[in-house]
Length: 325
Image (cartoon, rainbow, N blue to C red; front, top):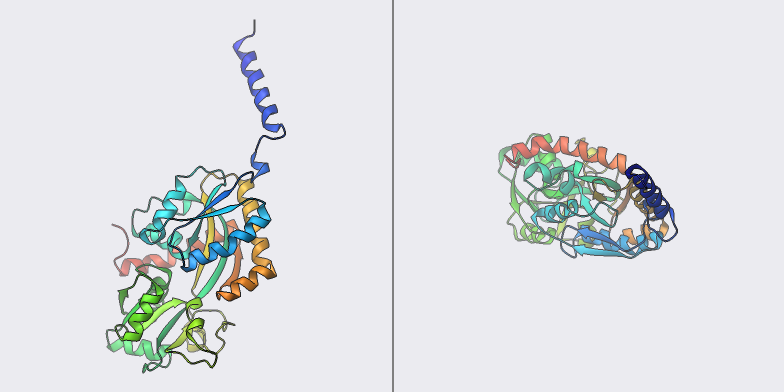
């Protein structure tokens, strides 16, 4: 008679053989079916643009369809919270950003923090910038900062605690001044507020600005500065913050994440695919059409980036009374 110990031993051996048999999917076989990519914002925004640029190239690299699912809400928190409830098998991933991954969990009960995810790769970045109307009296960043010392200036951008809002708030705090943020639901809405005179300046990712200039360089706005290490190729006439005496760098970036517990084999295969596409000339050419900079980081670098940005944002969020109670 077969003993219970013998039965268990036989069962374990049979399972091992079955898993090793051809046609049975294992982590090493990943992917064997379509991958769902959550975009935690609506269609048409920068996050959605990045996802839709990536999807067809990822499909070529991975050999499986990448299906984009827009799940907007709560400044990106809804889609990322949904990701944490997905099966951690590599078949549901999402696009996150500096603000949704680093700042948003400190502001409200999102249902996630950085530990809720396996970081896969940072993909692209754009420098933060500040713009005024073309007829504004402010010609430089210093003009703006000096005015903020004696006047209550106002500004707008794409939403409370969005990447642009936080970028400007951190800059103003480091410069020792303050200004009142007027909320907008998009960069376009913020631009309308700027041009109508409702606000004094606009904060935005650099990719929002080039399309506002004609071939002769004329525009209804003037970009005072971009927070990049060196002059941005898409707007070479715009000085950096550093050139104007402000040692301030701030980019807005987008990266790919998966639920915590996703097998390392899947994470590494996805990261490798992203690295390949970011380095491809075809993808770089597509990025140029939308004024994005390729900016690959692997899983460990991306997590360190998030931790560093959360640390720098915390005192600013506290000052703005945006930290969750």
